[in-house]
Amino acid sequence: MARPKGTGRQQLRKNPTDNGFRGKKDWLVLCVILVLTFIVFSPSLQNDFTNWDDDLYVTKNLAITSISLSDLDKFGDNYVGNFHPLTMFSLALDYHFFGLNPFYYHLKNIILHLLNTLLVFLFIRKLTRGNRFVPLFTALLFAIHPMHVESVTWIAERKDVLYTFYFLAGLIFYLEYLKSGKIMFLLFTAVAFVLSTLAKSAAVVFPVILFLVDYYETRRFSLKTIAEKVPLLAWSVWIGMVALRTQSASNAIGDFEYYSFFERIRFASYGYMNYLVKFLFPHKLSSFHPYPDRNDIPAVYNLAVLGIICLAAYLALFGRKRKWVIFGMGFSVITLALVLQFITVGNAITAERYTYVPYIGFGFIYGIMIEKLWTGEAYKKYRNWLAGILTIQILFFSGMAFNRTKVWKDSETLWTDVIKKYPEESGAYSNRGHYYRTQNRYDLALQDYNKAIGLDDKNFRAYSNRGKVWFDNGEMDKALEDYNRAISIHGDYAEALSNRGAAHAMKQNYEAALVDLNKAIELEPDNINALQNRSVTWYSMGNFAKAAADVTEYLRYKPDDADMLNLRSLSYNQQNMNNEALADLNRAIQLMPSQGVFWQNRSFLLFKMGDKAGALRDIRQAEALGLKADPAFLQMLQP
Image 1: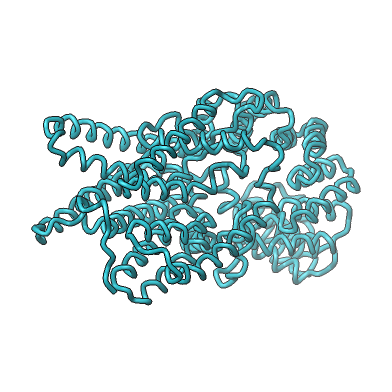
Image 2: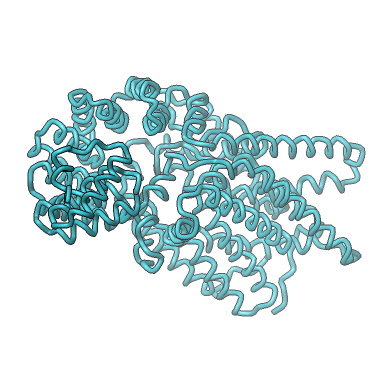
């Protein structure tokens, strides 16, 4: 198949005098870029998991921690309002081999980013007929841009680096198909596209990008160019419907009537212009950028609409003479279209992770502009200035990305950074307070929860989390007051219902506890905290069979929880299921041999079963671990 001749990009073609040595130099430069990129992102190897979706995707995700890799169908479930089975499987592989060691999760993200940088280079190289500068420069900007730190350093954003790998591979295969005409490469394109959508549904725009590539390659718009993409378009529609359904079920999509049509136009315009400006001048970077106050939307949103109009006018008037501008801008618009918040998704007006793929389009344009300035006769005297400016920019981007990676060290550093940028953001205080509570820094946690509630008295998570502080400190009345407030705001908040059930049980209001816990489990059948709380409640009520049943269900998800094995053993013991009780205690002691109470309980059980020697051995071990044995019981064990 003859490759169609392009127009308006002869300056990008490979110099016919280039030799193998020059080609080797390109690869050497690419290796330097990859080494620089690894250094820039290396601080993330010391980072921990954060409490922003890392828990939902990994540390508390039962699909990761309790489901076998053979249960592939489970990875297609809705997680955090998204459908991305390939991403879930990727994280499950990490857990299978490395457990909850964050080092390996971060390392894998960096490796995928390095591979994506290589693919950006190969894609632009093919697109520009082997041009030397533009592919390397585009790959460099992609690799070290500070706006990309979120996609690489955030473990929960594995979906970004993973879907991009297949997305770019598909584009490279497609260009190879256009060059060779071999159907095999079109099939490879389709496979890569499917895998990309299974990693993140944002890949549904891929077929539209293929039409854009056709435009750049000056392919005629015909039945053939449409027919070869029909299966891909059909898959896009299906994936899009699945994504909308899962996001709607998770309330991730906002009410379309809440913002007016013109407000949405302003939001979309602001988003695009903000991403464009931050491509050249990254500033005020944050993991969270909240919506503006609806009653006080800044004037910059109106200026953004004007900026979009001017940009569109320029492309309409001069774009046909600069096909590379149309391609680059089109690439960015298409890949950003679904996240410009014309339809409200989530509660952030912009997000840095959304630029991961779109910035390839901006980088492509920027690279060609730099090359034109460098090679243009009229600009020769400015080459030193240009080289100096680019060097400063690259060093600035690298340093900024390096430091930005450190912001993701843990939940405290992450949310403290958000608070610095947006001191009135309630959710940031609530999330940092959650971190402090898990570290038993209760005074700091209370300060943050109080601040969060003061900024937004509808923040039901802050009420529920503050209730946990009171609960942990034994102040059940205050805990119940906060749980009641959280549930009055969000009646189906399973976590608050589970927590309130536990508080009721602590006050021996068992019937009230069961009402809350039953509803929590009805809302979230795999809510292991609710299962744990209900099993303790059943045991306290003397319903040992139901206590054992709940523990059994709980252990399906966390089979190595020694405390719950001990509780089930006690429940079996009360039902005279001695062998079952003994098996659980043996396993509990195997898991936590330093827990004296387990040895004591097994001593009691062995005595009950007539094994005095075994009972004496175990009670002595319990004493060695710090428990004081009842003298009367010891007397009973004497031969």
